[in-house]
Length: 601
Image (spheres, rainbow, N blue to C red):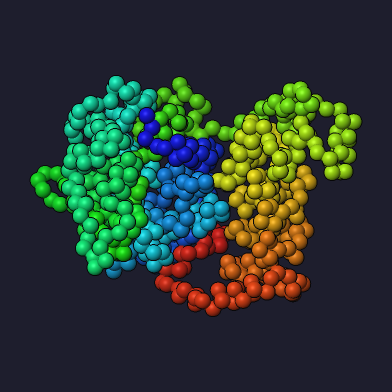
């Protein structure tokens, strides 16, 4: 019954399992409940880029007090849970987004547009850390990459999470498509006619079923949306896909019953009721509130994308169906495995003791795997950091000698080689174990990776791209993992499919300065290039990593001729292409302040 296509449902399942692990929820909640908002942010991997005392000094004690009140009720793990995701092959955070959480203009002062906001990472494959900022959000990003969640506190403020059920189209006692305890409705329990707004959950279900059946016109009429599909007049005529087809494809994921109420909240905040709803293939759907009677109606028109510049976007989190409802409805995720604040808001009668052991499950202990070996079925299993096989030491020596002379290994030994070299085929169960390990690394789950290593998983594993766990240290806590991996003998100069070493990956994929320095201290070579003949100096220059200027100078001094000459020309072009952006008056909040000894803010 899930409206999500299989690939999208699988992607959201990965998000809910790996993006916000249980330990993060538990630690962040424990800190938040004691009033330690900074500790909660640290537990949820959120960097704080402002200082409350400087805010008070510049904008007054009242502004600082209002900001502190929001910070004490901020649930950073819940914020991470709801943030947009890259739903292709990766399920990491959508990049370069600014999400405004709350507006804080000084009382009686000039309108400065001060707000509390969060920014997402700049790279899909980079560290999954968020940055919490205070200042003028509009001066830092383009408007199209900004979402205003100031009217959606149920997505991040612990005081308002109970409103999630209403904001996703639910009623007083249940969420759409579910019983109060989270059990999905059977097909025969779904409405066969529109019960109207008096039954919010049933009304949402009826409208959603109409859109899923392709009856978009009936769904729009039921929620009071007047759709005019007439393309705008242009000198060159209309081009691209017909608006009706685009809307039919998009409407399956949109909660049409909530568009008018959400537009009203945004209009009250921004002072106007005109917003962009979607942008597909150069076609933009514009939504505008039209006053008509006791309830709001919405007029939807079509425009070219280039003609709608400057019109703010309605945040996707406010317009689409809540993914958690779709996942529970389709049986993809159990209600008790959702974030506790989400599960408690959506399903008031849910008893977590009846379900699995709480929100996103932790890593499983590696189970034995059957391998076809010399005409027999053998069981292999990871224990004590290695693959345990039913073979004697003499058989192991013979296989090592055979491989040294270029012979082909098979069975259990071929499985071990595929695990450590990314070549050859792994049994399905071992592929799943490897995927689980690297998905946890991809989402920055250091405790999860350590738990798997403690359970006996071989740390010499490589993913399908040839990357080792050392290559993933830019995503994890290197202080805990680097010494352990080096002690286990994981190669410091191992290369992936791009011929990148762990140090090269740390430089190119936004690894911290501390990680780069730790790899250098461990003896990592700096005279390395990747498959495109780029040196470390070239990468540092191209990506403008000023924090690694010391490494660039060292490479240039010790290995002046390394790398292709044409990269020098490209790097010079990049350096001269744009001037450095001018600092604005709120740049003082862009970088965290160094802690002071008696800082009790």
